[in-house]
Length: 113
Length: 111
Image (cartoon, rainbow over all chains, first blue to last red; front, side, top):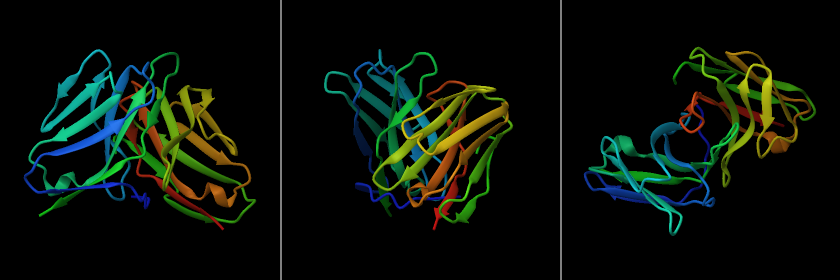
């Protein structure tokens, strides 16, 4: 697979702790907000999405929170594991004819053993 | 990688030469996308397709063209490669635009 040296901000957490990854989005009219995970040498992988009319959504070990008042999105990962080490991207979508995603710049999560 | 392949996986080419990257899917998804990923910029959309022969521009489409003559194939062409097009290129597919599945990427170096 391919990787890019992205020179991104890094969040370092201890294995077993909870991680919180934050993102500010730009378009108050966006309908969906999504988190993607990109492991080294691979393409991004869909994790979880949340619709704009919700403020919280839970998945397996992950929770996404949406605060539309301050245009803020966060991804919480419970009991962080070494396999969670990756670059995490938030993305937003304004639905309409042939809508598309706008990605944030990404944050690197590093899990310390 | 959700039935997506990209070819070639690596390519080195000279400035001014044409280059075509291929994305092939076996999922029969309607939408296909080409992104480039660069340090400091994250993922940026080049072009996308919402059906056979239906394509549209993304935010960084200058210098690129695309074609989709079959559901399963989406081609990205650099008519005359420049050094600024050195990047990692990702193809993605989806049936809903927000849940996209990405291919493994192509590293293109233009010398």
